[in-house]
Length: 238
Image (cartoon, rainbow, N blue to C red; front, top):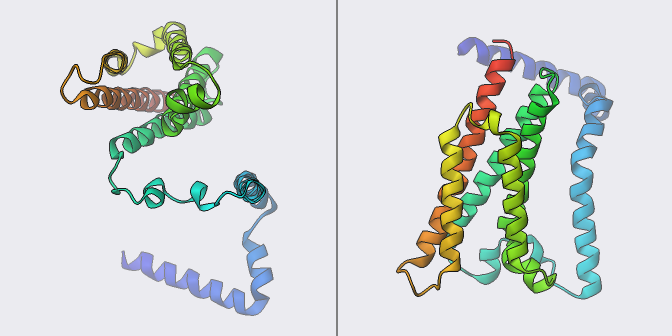
C-alpha cells in the first residue's frame, strides 16, 4: 500500500512539473486524444441538444423549465420516499437492460451464432422498453390520456413481445436462470390480474398489485444477470 502511495505521489509530481513547463493547453492536449474527444462528444451532444430543445420549448410555450428538470418530489413538496418501490423497480429495469447490452458488446466478437447474440439485444430492448413505460407511466397515462390509445392494446403488445422472446429463445432461457424467468412471468401475470379487480375487493390492493410487479421486475433482472454472467464467463478466456 505504501509503495502505491509513493508511485501515485511520483506520478502526480511529474504531472505538476509537466503542467508548469508546457502550460494548461499543452498539458491537456498531451492527455486528450482525438478519439477520446469524439467519444466524449458522442455522449455529451445528445444531452446538450435535449437541454437546448427543452429550454427553447419552455420559452416558447411559457412553461417553467424547473417542471422538467427538478425532482418530482421537490416540485410537489411530497415526502422523499413516495414511490420508492416504483423507483427501485425502474433501477432494476435499467440494470436488466445494462446487463444485456454490456454482454452483447463483450460477446459480439466471440459468438458466431447471430441467434444467441440477438438474445441479448432483444432482452435488453424489452427491458429498456418496459423501463421507459414504467418510469414515464406510458400505458397508464400518456397512451390513453394524451395519445388516445387504450392501455389494453399497449399491454397486449408488451405481452406479444414477451411471448416472442420466450418462444424464440427458449433453448437459451432454459439453460440458466430458468426458475427466475418463470417466476417473473408468474408475478407479472398476478399483478395484471389484480389490477383488473376492483380496488375495494382486496385489502391492501396496491400492495399486492405493485408488490407482485416489483417481484416480477426483480426476478426478470436476476434472470438476465444470471444468463449474461454465465455466457460471458463461458465465452471469454479466464
